[in-house]
Image (cartoon, rainbow, N blue to C red; front, top):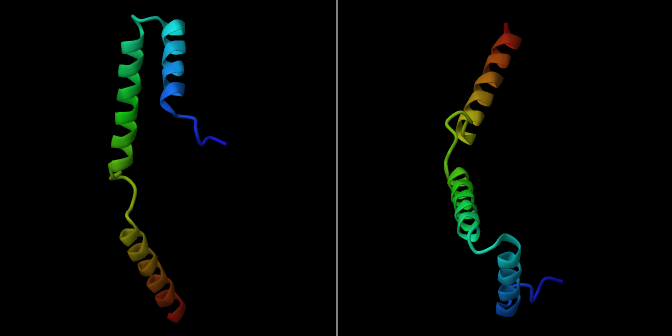
Length: 75
C-alpha cells in the first residue's frame, strides 16, 4: 500500500505543497520545531527513569515478599 510513497518525486511535490501552504518564511521555523521534537522524543526513549524500578529490583522485591509470606505462614 505504501511501497512507493517516499520516492523523490513524491517528496518534491510534498515540499512544494508545504511551501505554498506555509510560505518560505515559516518553513525553517517549522523544520526547527520538528527537529527539536524528534530529538526530544529520542532522548526520552534513551533515558532511564530513576523513579521506575528495574526488572532486577522488581524480582528482588517479589522474592522478599514471598519469603515474608512463607515466614508468616510457618508461624
